[in-house]
Amino acid sequence: MDYLMRKFWLIALLWTVGAESSTSQPKSRANGSPASKEWVSDYGTLLTKIVTKDGLIRYQVLHKETTVFHSVLRAVETYDARKLHTDEQKLAFWADAYNVLMLKNLLESPNISDIIRSGKADAFFKKPFLVAGMGLSLDQIEHGILRRQANIQVPEYLRVGKVDPRLHVALNCGALSCPAFLPVPLSKGPMELQLKKAMAAFVNSPQHFRLDRQRNEWVITSLVQWFGPDFDLSGKKAGDFLVGFMSSNRSDYVLMKKMLSGKDGKTLAALTQFEGKKVRFAYDWQPNRAKE
Image 1 (cartoon, one colour):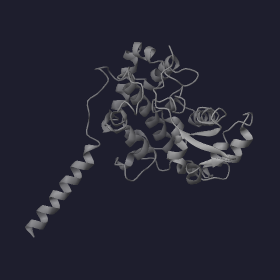
Image 2 (cartoon, one colour; image 1 turned 180 degrees about the horizontal axis):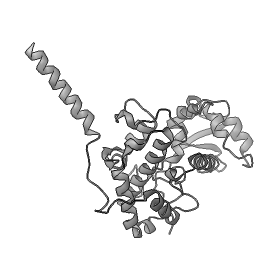
Image 3 (cartoon, rainbow, N blue to C red; image 1 turned 180 degrees about the vertical axis):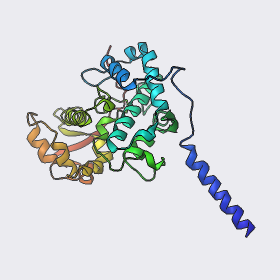
Image 4 (spheres, rainbow, N blue to C red; image 1 turned 120 degrees about the horizontal axis):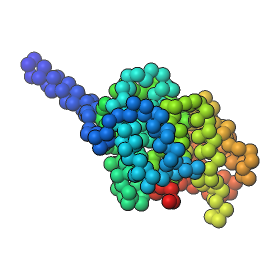
């Protein structure tokens, strides 16, 4: 009996250590800056300086604005996430936090030419950073908190109750093929309007959906291949959800609508041919640096 009890407590202890490891506190990356008391406003002002009309980032300008940026970062690091009660509040804060942390990652890697090929993927997405008073990785924010993936360990109170597929245009992974960087903090609101604009910009950008006439093939963002079923969570089939934001003024609108409409996420993710042309899923992992 004593042996069984000791074994039980050992297993319990190991589980507890494992559970707490994801929420232990890493060191601050804010260079000793105090937390901004009006971080959403300060972050918004910063975004007007560093985000281009195409949703790219002027990292040289960001480097000159590190005092303000680090105060915003410190506010994100020390934020009390227990104040987030609704899914809208959670999506807004965690999207902004994710984007601030990614800006810091790229600010610290000025010479990186490709996030994946450089071997930075684990350091960027899997390494825990200090955020909301705990250690969380960007993958935990995206997949555990906002996508509610059961295999990603995060405190349950942090998770949204219902997944909003528009999270994929709210988060910016720092690469050229990411949806455009949000020009206004999601926490500033109005969130619904911001997300609608972001979705429209996403589906109407040739970066994400286009007919490559030179190669005679359809090109679709890999986000659809990776997360197709997420877009079904809107209550519509993924293809119909995406087409709903697409402009009828696109020269290829009729064919795009035909290719996407009526298809769920799993079907879209498995597309290989349409109208006799190859369908290619693509993603460019070069950093989203604006040309200075």
